[in-house]
Image 1 (tube, helix red, strand yellow):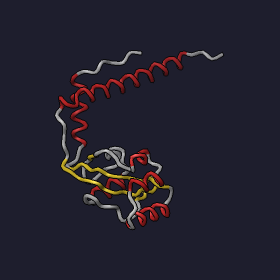
Image 2 (cartoon, one colour):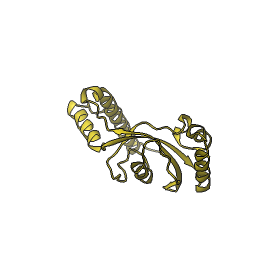
Image 3 (cartoon, one colour):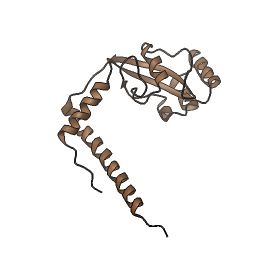
Image 4 (tube, one colour):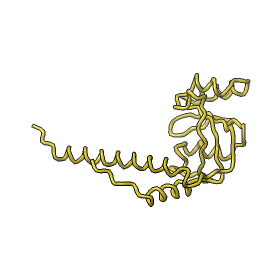
Amino acid sequence: MKPKPISEDDVRKQYEMVKAGLGEFEYKPRIMLVQDEATARGVIAQLKSGGTFDALARLYSSAPSAARGGALDWISFKAPPVAGKTQGIPLAVAQAMTGMKKGMLAANPIAADGRWYVVQLDDVRATVVPEYESVKPMLRRMLEAREVERAAESLVKDLLAKAKVE
């Protein structure tokens, strides 16, 4: 394997690309991914009658964040949201979040990609962009890992192309 070295310029370009994708605000959502609309409506009814998002997410959600009570990390994207530029959040969910206020529960389930989401917005704040020097090591490691993965994939393809099956 021969991964290409990651230059300072590569790291700087990655930083600028990430920075360019950030919006004016950061959102701290809780999300439940449920099987169907009826379940989603039932969960919303339970939330409105005093149930906690944390407990219900652990019980009903199939999202990876279920174990954390549906809590996601802070995310930021430009508004209005555009498909593919919402940091992995389905477009319909991102669109709903931009219209919500801190502490608000989406009144209705949100359908996206054949799935149903229950969304609560825990907090909203102005986007905080970390200084380049503070994120540079993390960006470098990410780019190096990506390059090792690319080099390994290339090696496997080359080996498969040269392999002789008898």
